[in-house]
Image (cartoon, rainbow, N blue to C red):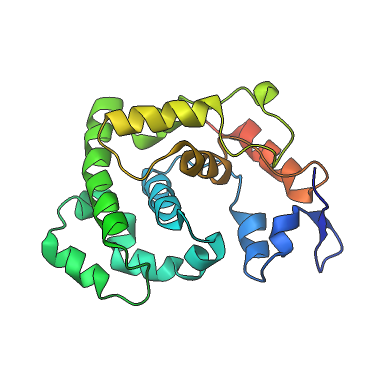
Length: 201
């Protein structure tokens, strides 16, 4: 366990929540709470793909621009993107203008549509890999897990791109498949309660 961050309200949080002003709200309201909405799950996979090699702060600050540029990460719409959309996005200074990553998430939108057909939903696929909490180490000590490796391998087999095990582990942390809030962080218990009442897809 790392040093906890004492927030302005006097209560302890994960240390990273104090690393930038915009992190606290994201930490308290989103990170680690379970999600089964396919569009939100797909958005997070895309944003984690864009983050590869960059800081989450950069991505978080541009998240609304990404949403505007990619139709709210509606993968049904994104699956129809063509070269003109790639050029449009490459000209968008509000996002990360990386051709490989842009083309990868458009490709992944097509793969997401296929997954809904074969699995019923993205949520059903991802949550089928939820690890047993007992197998997880101390919070913030892992960057991959057997489950993130397995998801990455399966996604790549299905043609997804920019979905390595570390990217997928960060996705699992954020979307509540694991509760990786530090012991002593006040949000850890909130996430645990949310996970208890969460109806798995």
